[in-house]
Length: 105
Image (cartoon, rainbow, N blue to C red; front, side, top):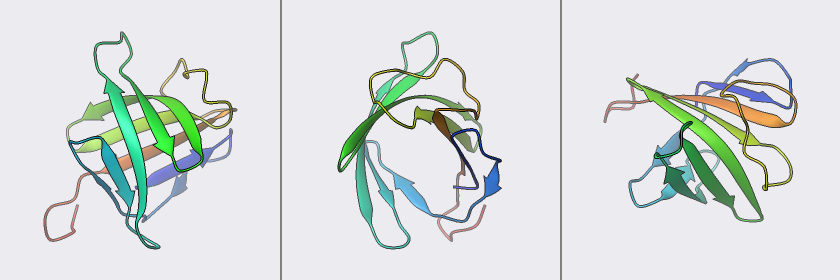
């Protein structure tokens, strides 16, 4: 993850490593492995996804542009999908940059 913004706050640079797998699992690599499930909805007019954290469900939107993945998820209820792929009140916005096998961007 290279950028994070929460609930209307500023975009903040990040260095948190994540691993996304094709089987619907993602892992936050530091500080330690935290497993998160996801389900993509690529057929939606805006590409949607569901993130299942250990204690909560978040609905979101995503865009994959080259080596950059942008996501926005609801920050609270887990019942409403965001309508725009941008930071703002009530959402968590993240940008991820693909790394090569040596861990470099």
